[in-house]
Length: 202
Image (cartoon, rainbow, N blue to C red; front, side, top):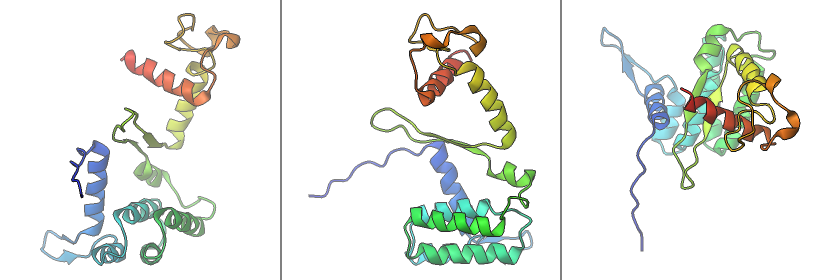
């Protein structure tokens, strides 16, 4: 017997994604009333036909957003059309591999990407909490933010630092600690512990 389950409430991240999909796949109008085609016209057609899934749209939207603005508009359009066609026969993960190769072809050495492109791509999203009460944090950082984070982690997430589960763990930066006294040895675990400690101090 089929059992219906309540759909989980949307998260801010999922709402932003839905809004991005709608903006990219919908027709728009100018102030003068002229109709404009969707930004991702070929993708919109494929989705309307039922040939691709929303997961394909997310991949295409992500790849399209990473194409540098200085790339010729005809190449932008051709890239989106190619991705939409590949999406009809590929899984979202396989489509992402195609998109990665496409980006490498359009901007081989990264020289076309400027600060405006990087600002457009930067993001940080938090997933819905799962059954184990865990959440996934996903971020795309620009070079300046990455450099600042590297400094913080090197100082504050070093072995033995800022561990609330260890009463003997020093609080502060790495210069104050004994590396042999750490309880949390895994680097990813230490970053999580640091994040929790930092939030608690706000």
